[in-house]
Image (cartoon, rainbow, N blue to C red; front, side):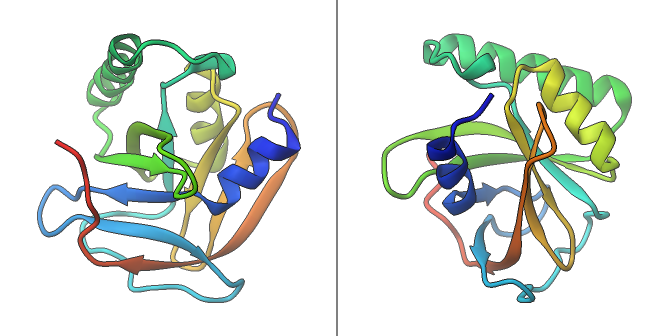
Length: 154
């Protein structure tokens, strides 16, 4: 279960998204009621999930990438639309690779997060950006905005 400090970090994190076509962009939490332009080719809601550091345990980068590959393989088997994504805490060097998955219900997104040992997932709609707990009923909702091409590592 995530701590209050974890939740504060989740709430201020940004997510860099790499669309199948077009320029990468950054999703930034913003004031409630604000929303940017929804990207073409992505059906809402979008669930942002990772397989990194399952159950809050820091694991080596190779293990994290292997877990993320299992997640991607599952999405491909299910025929879901997804784009690569990287969640970042701008107050530190911490980042986690993951995916932005189109069209899952919130319940399906939470089930996916639970399968990969995650404390929470992000749920993005045209009107809101939410961090939703995979382990209890905790949820943090705000607005969002998109910024231009983020510095995405290769």
